[in-house]
Picture 1 (tube, rainbow, N blue to C red):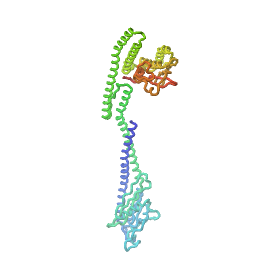
Picture 2: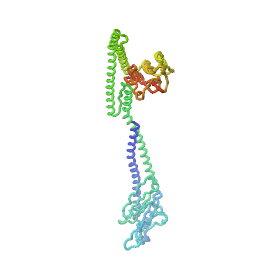
Picture 3: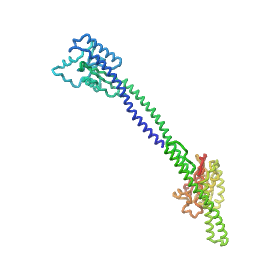
Picture 4: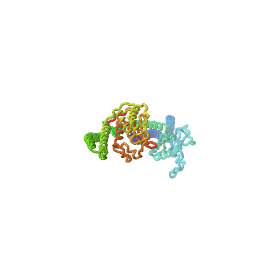
Length: 512
């Protein structure tokens, strides 16, 4: 569950951080650019204030010494500004011709169409009425136009001619290496626009500062993401810890450890209430099972005494009847069968209720001993009983394992015909020891193999064989009490193969 819940939380957290990070990055870039634009507006306003006092007559021949000094001052200021900041700046008249620029080699690109002439004027008259004089010694080259892809400078100039500051340039992003910032401000004298100051700024420093701030945002979001992942890990651990405990306890109860309970842990209140309810349910289930086992054990024990007395009276009555009386023999056989069923019921109740006394046992020696005990019965039935029992140790209750092995050998000899064989082998595997008992009996179908070990179940083909149908149930209970298992499978060409699995390492304490 954690592997599914944690990625979902991380994806949600990453989405939140990205949703916050993108607007923040855009806002930072816009703020940095706005600072540059405000600086250019201030600079262009200062140059416009210098340019508005430069005055000449129509052809510039009547310029005074004061006008010439002001023009020289303006040209000097523009040159110093361009050398200091690397920003191109120029003052252009109403026709777009440069009056003072730094550097002197660029000018506005030509307009898309000639501007309309004022009524009663010619082009030369219009130019002479608005052209500002060039400072002495300045040289302008028309060979290198104002480098502006997309006509931003011309658009800014045209907007400023209308008496308004040019609109803010479009946002410059760090990857746009060819972008520049163009700002234009009108030069106004006596309420009329007589010229326009245009600044053309490189964006390298702006893009660098924006990128640095973006890196800080990325680093901050990375740190926030790490903190969020750590918090998500702790959150999922806090939420899922009771679930894992509940899962482990459920598995313990399912495998027979009925005294297992959910330990008090943290987590959400809903899971704590679930743990409390689970413990109450487990207590009720254990109580019901204990009552059932106690009833079976008490009933078996209480019925044995009257049954023994009944069998004794049957024997006494049989003495008064002829020796070959079939009714007396049938009643005696049914009574003995009932006694075996009661004994097996009591044994099953004790096997399910008792705790295994596990010790490190020589499984090979124990199997060899039980093999020797059953060999006389095998010889009596003319069945070959062989075994391979190497010395190998495992954790088992010797008494319970002996009883389980006896039940399996009894079952194998019971269904193996005369002249056939029953083989016992002890094999060490990684983490377990397996005692395998194979017979050459009639075997079982797949459906019957799935039901073997059920209480009171016997194959329809073997109803005439004596037994209560509880032997293998007792065997399974004895093995599971010690952490082992009982497995059955087909044996080729016919017969069954029973495997008693014993752990080689000490299992957890098992209680029933």
